Amino acid sequence: MTTSLRPPPTPSGTWNPEDPVFWAATGARTARRNLVWSVFSEHVGFSVWSLWSVLVLFLGPEYGVDAAGKFLLTALPTAVGACLRVPYASAVAVFGGRLWTVVSALLLLIPVLTTAALLEPGVSYSTLLLCAALGGFGGGNFASSMANVNALYPQHLKGWALGVNAGGGNLGVPAVQLAGLAVLATAGAGHPRLLVLLYVPLVVGAALAAALRMDDLRLPRATYPLRALAARRHTWLVSLLYIGTFGSFIGFSFAFGQVLQVQFADAFATPLDAAYLTFLGPLLGSLARPWGGRLADRFGGGRVTLWTFAGMAAGVVLVLLASRAHSLPLFVTAFSALFVLSGAGNGSTYKLIPEPATDPQDALGRARDSALIGFAGAVGAFGGVLVNVAFRQSFLTSGDGDLAYAAFLAVYVLCGAVTWKVYARPGT
Image 1 (tube, rainbow, N blue to C red):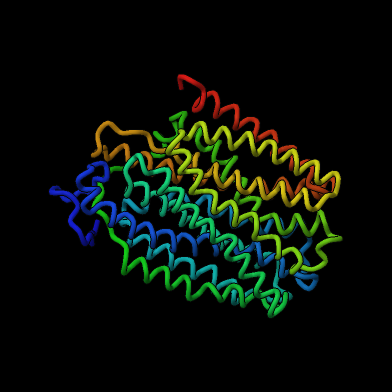
Image 2 (tube, rainbow, N blue to C red):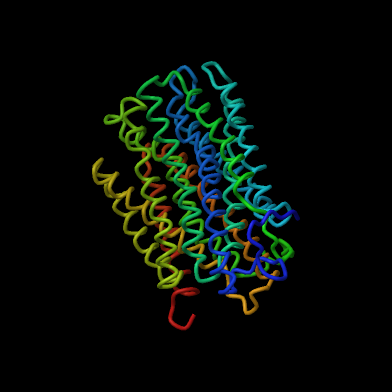
């Protein structure tokens, strides 16, 4: 592994954030610098991953895509991004944080340039599916970025650091939706390519910033096999909880604009009308994520995650009531609360992943945590696929989202019960 550390880490040359002397002298400063540029790269990745949550609003009658087809277009990049998270999380240990951030950023040019070249009226639906699938490259960046930050910070700061990194990345969702709103308001729905091309300089900028300002830290080399990871109960429990939190956040982020247009068609006659509200929930959820991590550092990941699921269960009940009453103000308010709670729960759930190591130089423990970050991130992202599939099936079956909301409620109750039994109950 190459190294470009500006301040030498420890006498042995190995990064050791648990050493308070090293952390105070050079570690904290180096970690913060790498965190800043990791956030920027991940932010751009999330924006590219979320492009189709906005592009579907540009697909008017001339594209020949119905509501069910649009939900599939938003589900596909979520699924591909989920699959990429496992190998991306391992890539940091193999190539180094700086090199892999550069490579993963440049890979984003594939979906951006392909979509810009092919997106036009008359394009086949299969081509649209291909472009949407390529957007999954942006979903993989999260896992490698989180694995890198997890290795940078000491145990007592991981909740905050991972929350800041993920929250800054998650802000890519409302950012691309605000950019879409600007394009819709100025150029109109006939120019989706303008939105896509906005990200070409941002992708190149993220790669350059990583190359110039990040480091390939010399971490203890170790690998943790996927078979061993899958054999641990903790792996599957954390992954289930991440389905409930991150799966909800990313699934709602991709689907919210479509839900508004279909369920409240009388209030959203044009894509621009929906775009004014689409970004609000993802913005609030992204801002809540670091605070969820901070609260988890203080009160424990189990407690905060339990509070989150209790709030989400109450929130989805309000969404269901608003849907049945056809009350747009209550619907938007309750959905905004779901975004905030799911964002906070993302941070608190990730606090449960790293297990305290008795030896700060425990390379195998760090490798296990990084592998679990990628695995839980992948499974949680598939929760976003399930959200879009649930909405699609609910609207096909009953013409509204009520069946989907009932399913979400069942998931939150299950996740809350698991959190209480395993992570929050006194004595656990």
